[in-house]
Length: 265
Image 1 (cartoon, rainbow, N blue to C red):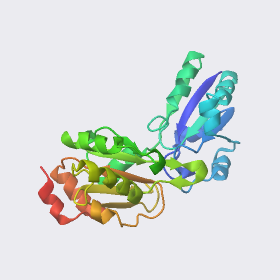
Image 2 (cartoon, rainbow, N blue to C red):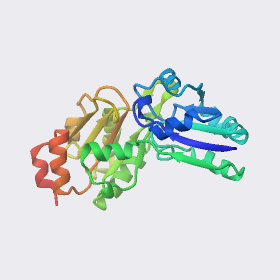
Image 3 (cartoon, rainbow, N blue to C red):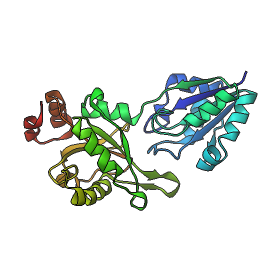
Image 4 (cartoon, helix red, strand yellow):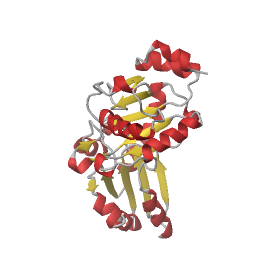
């Protein structure tokens, strides 16, 4: 029976896959994986193949975007195919186009969800999920624009938090850091002067969410500019109006300064 299953891998290593996801792999005729949309710091393809007892084919960006997922779709038309994706399959990737094409070809699809950076940052920081506004990606300098700054400013006007995903190029082993992202935002700050990324603006940095030893630090931008977050991947948050419980969580869990209590509702 033809079928395409999208399986989330979680955030760190091969153990992040759910039991349901692992069972789908074990019963699939063809298994594919992409590892270019996000960094899984401790992931081992060999270990996942040992866990599942199946061979897994790694796909490139070319295979999925320029070839429109041809290999996956052709396999799914012949039997059960599983497509493995870092994080949760449709949170921060473009793979919805693959699912749409499968639907056009009358290939049934299902999704086995995995942990995503969105759920992880909420759980680790103590920020309230219903207070997040539009998410934005901060690109590398060669593609940088004022858009991230503008999104943060717009969300802040509404009292909402902004989740900033940081760019990566897995094939080049390049990962934008929190420090680099803040420096680029400050260049826009120098022109617009809206106190979005000024030294006394407040932000939260997170590195290696989903790993055994994530680094979470909340503080003023001037302090975070020189803070050592360690190895990637990294995420940045600009909080909007804080509830007093959110402030307490950031003080207790992320080393935020005590004065944060005076900045709450």
